[in-house]
Length: 244
Image 1: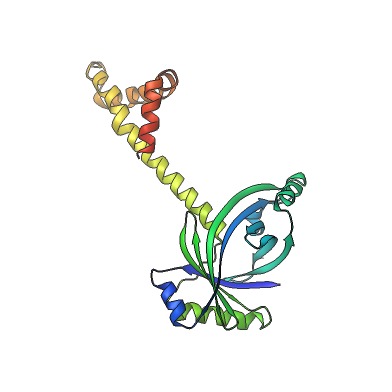
Image 2: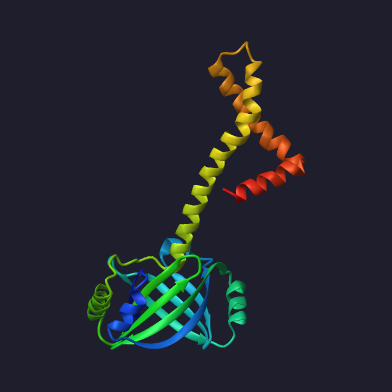
């Protein structure tokens, strides 16, 4: 089957708007999604996904193909019920698949005619809205309906990325930002303390040459010699990194 859905960031009044438009509440689910990567190709590159979903009603194994359009998140999808998600994971691992990530969320589902609206609280990402159309009304009509529901709720800018992709993007962005801040902290708080007093006694060097040579020397000295052998400095470094 072809899954046709749109996703957008939910706002504070989105739940009220869903109720006001006449949608009927269906149920609340808790999802624990385990994602796996293939030994044959990288699913991140091929835009595919293999997932075990564990929820109150049981577990499901789902394969999702590459996205089919440039506007919303439409893709080929096959899903089967599984009795034992633990054993299913062991089978996948034995075949060479590796668990790549996991996503946890709380989903509140609503029915609006032949449309299913899901309000998701995703761990590590926040609130999102997903709109899915019925499978038997044709792909183009599905796209029209889900986009009209999204517009009716005042949510523009459909997000084509999956929750897994959003989490990976956040991880990369956060890691780079933290790395830059840590480098700045090292220069401002450690390198200046150890380097500048020594520069005062380096009269045979010009100020520019001394700064260049001695700064390089004592950055290496601090990181390579002091930190590995001094537990107090190591503890201070860990506390400082956590406080950035």
